[in-house]
Image (cartoon, rainbow, N blue to C red; front, top):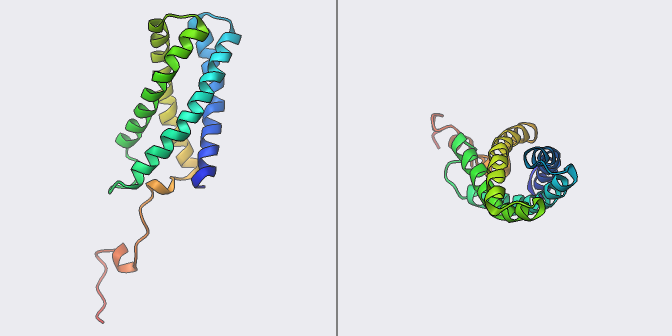
Length: 158
């Protein structure tokens, strides 16, 4: 599965699981009623969904232009960190407002969630790629000929 279909399946699965987990976690750490945490989780999920589409589109655009193909551990870590950094900039003010927290408290809460979601994002991406395969941007380009595919192959005389 590739392209827009892959992105839509990815963000839908990612956010459905995320809303359930983050509603519970926000309610637990903020000691606020579940409904407030649920509103914060759903709102942050919509923001995260839009950010996810934009971020992954940009990441795959960058990734497709890299010489080295594939998704190494370092590339996966950079991907997760970049996504979470952008999200924290958007969510701290939201959490402060919806949960009645200071910006500092919201930042501390978001750091806890960010650590959780970095691990979640990393594991989700591994599982998603395992089930659905790598996106085209991470696949090696097909060899132009059989000789190009195997540099050790004998060269035929012409």
